[in-house]
Image (cartoon, rainbow, N blue to C red; front, top):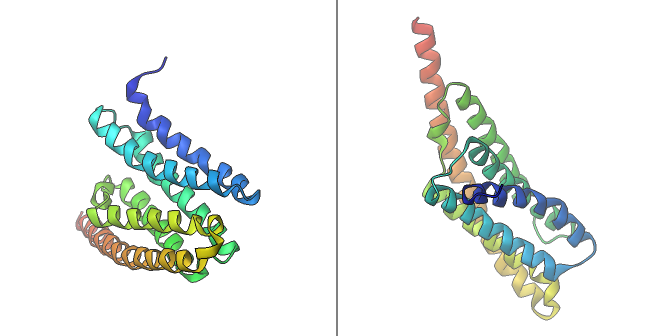
Length: 191
């Protein structure tokens, strides 16, 4: 039976389904549909969390899958952009490596019930916004051949800003995690 409280999780699961759909659309050059998919993914990323809080339906599944769905989709899109030279491999590698490191730290901290110290910060939300803007702009390139060079430049600027924010927020998360994990280690050794 459908309940309003299920909407956030439905949005999250639908974003996971966007990944294979993106690959199909990208492979067959359905760029308009790809653009719609990027818009849907960014809006659903915002609304699943917003609705979960509004409907008081935050769940462990939602909290776990929401960041995973976001990262899988954005990493899939960025890798396809590398494959057709819309994005620089090193920039995309930095973004993906940061996501893997932070996910690993969250998992390590969850063992000690400390994962809340890596809750999403305002700066991380800004980073995600810039990332979706960069993806949106870079998705436009094949839709407007006449201005593709200009679109590429603007999209690349947003991707560089995303990368700077990625490195900075990743650094902050790593430092926070190290401090907490060292404290846990000292507390264990004290016994």
